[in-house]
Image (cartoon, rainbow, N blue to C red; front, side, top):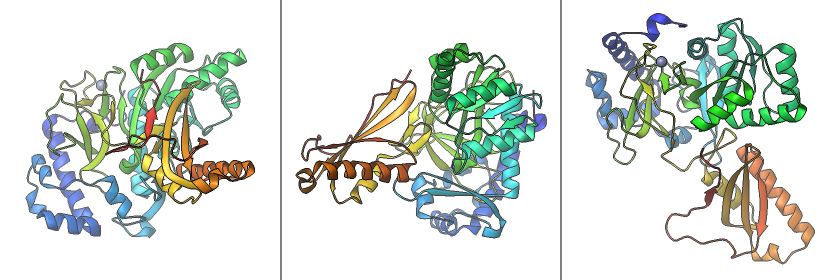
Length: 429
Ligand SMILES: [Zn+2]
């Protein structure tokens, strides 16, 4: 099933021509962004430099750090009055990355999500419960508007109150759910405890976390759904960048909208199809915030063969990160963010360790923090208050609940060279 059959099944030559046309247009658009004007001039890239798609290699990469340096609106290519929505994503230190959308961007974005959902047989007959964080996270509103565009009956339940979620699924005859795979697992367990099944469910859309084939099997048998992997990135609108088709062997990227390269993260050189590397994406249809060669940090490969559904080459499931970003309950966390928070609290030192576990299918983060000598000899009540303060500061900065343990000065490991402050004990299954 197709939402936009003509575009989704373009012949390779027509697709390349469209990509080149849109790349040139994007290159013109970024001239409204000071950062790009300067960066392209330095690299000697002019409009005339791009004659074929291969010429994209002349264009310098854009990194997350660049977006952060542009905080808040430095990457907007249109005046603020044309921006109708803003989302943010966590940065590596205090400041988030801001992404903006024009009215047309929101329309384009929801169209891409409608393509994904239609691809797996979802129609206006379906009832959709969107069990992810609404708000600044793009996963909530992104899927919400895409589902409305398809004409589904949308229940914006967001996260939390799992029993109520299950009641709604049953009372409203929900056929399709969207959440993180770990929350889906939790949902199935709570349903079991309640002694209920969710018989109306047919389709599960799971994303924002890495998950495996064995998790897919478990979720499918426990929830009675067909499970699909969804991939997106706020910098590239949000969800809707890549999605599995019914083959469920790799994810389709909408090649008319996103130009994908896989590079060796060390050298920056493109690698061949079938070889693993960091995914670099140039969005071709963004108006408010065009980007050139954006380094996603996500590690994958372009699968060599096309797909019987005729939507072109797929990418493999994301297998990791080329940087130190952690994904905890679907939220991006950089160890440097934690360090940044701790440095602002005078009673603690700058030594910490982060442990990540998966308990009852939910990610739990524990931070061991060394306190300084003065605080260590203080009253117990003061220590309890300090512990609460650290928890609160981390929650405010990361939008994530953590467990904090205060430990004696000098008790945490010291590192020579690059510190390994994160111990991820989640089983990658
Ligand atoms: Zn396919």
